[in-house]
Length: 134
Image 1: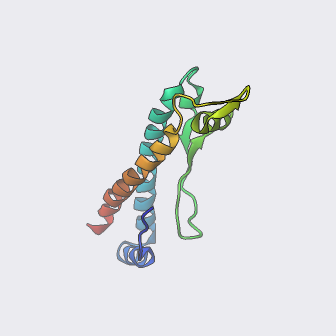
Image 2: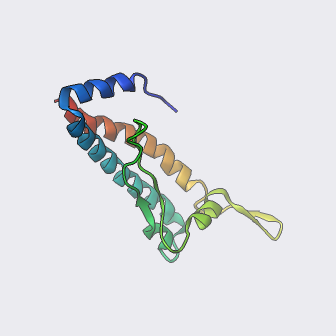
Image 3: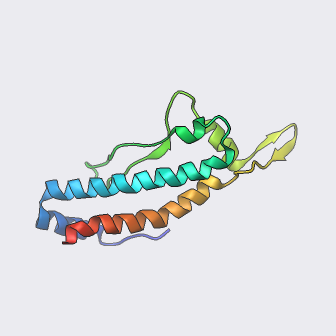
């Protein structure tokens, strides 16, 4: 996984140039846009084992959090009354049934989506934060 160095200085310069409120608005907007795209990637990945559609429909993103620590994030996952994360876990890693290991058709699909989301997130965040450089 790649890491970005010097983020504290970059964020300090952005806040100094634009003000803390505008910087927060732009950063939050970039995070929400990126998370929406990652939700679409995840939905595409879980469509391999789409039966009733509940796993597909319950992929959601959370709100921006972590402002007090200085590092903001958004969670993408499964919410709802059907607790689909249990089934996603079985489909993602496989399971043993009657002494035999079962490899579902969509095995590893969420991990592939997460790997694709890394590059997507970096690109989208760079474009979203480019607004601050103007």
